[in-house]
Image (cartoon, rainbow, N blue to C red):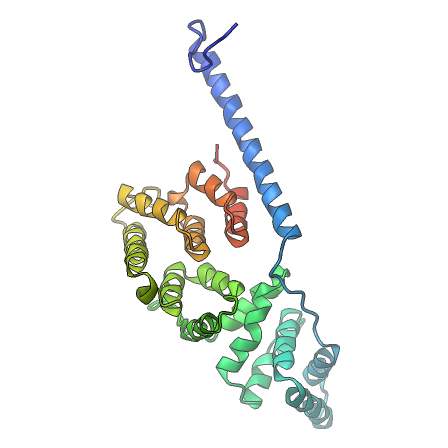
Amino acid sequence: MLTNQNVRPPHMCATHRNRLSIILSVRRRHILVALVAAVLALSASSFGDAIQFTPDPAVGTALADLASAADSAEREAAWQRIQALDRSDRGELIRGLVYFTRDAQSTRAGMIAGTVIAELEIAPRTVIEALVPMLESTDDSLIAQVARVLSQYEDVSAARPPDYSVYREIIEQADRENAPIPRGLVAHMMRSHPTTALITMTRALRLGERDHAALKRLLWADHVIQDVIWKQQHGFLNANRVEPAAEAQLDVLLEEEAWWVRLYAARTLDSHPAFRNPARINQLVSDRDRQVREAAAAMAATEPDLP
């Protein structure tokens, strides 16, 4: 017998309809949770551009000896070893400083990195270039520590957005040389300040020269979205409400070809829950790009009321 499943049986009462709605909502929630788990498993098994880092034991030992030195003779001996390590491989020393700071067990040990960088007069650009590859690590605690160090060079304050000019130069160089864009760096920028990251990417990739219409489309979308966020922050719009024009622009960004634009959309949803809805989160969770999927999966896993 053929039946039309879209036709509600005439005898179904309101109570039964409510129960059915709850059951379907729970089932959809279970399906989404399973999808999130599958995305995370896929990401873990296909982390193609991730890098495994191993700290140099010699660097860690020298830094520990400097931090625990009891007198000037011990400090001088440790310092000479650090200078030798710097001459041998400055980048490895800088990366070792990050490991040492992350694992520091005392205030004194935590201050060693700043002291070494200052005494060796290591330029900010050198520090940044040494740390950018570490943003591709699979170690979340390491990425977080690198982000804390990088933030010291971003000149950010409550009155102004971060300065990503050095990041822009790094991405520009990669683009000129047809080298892979440092995706970990892009993800770091998007986590910290999506709007500045979006503008930095459009400039670094010379989008105005390559596709002026696309540049205008992205800038306009960000303007409309940020206008709503500004209204929310200053009390002109309820924090739980968004304007249809901003939602429409966000949906445009979700369809963009460039993965970093869709990552911008994911980070916007992550930072501003009023923009979230099941359709957008599901679309991002199943995105073709790993970093977009990961950003969306982490957000969806913490969304309590998602049907």
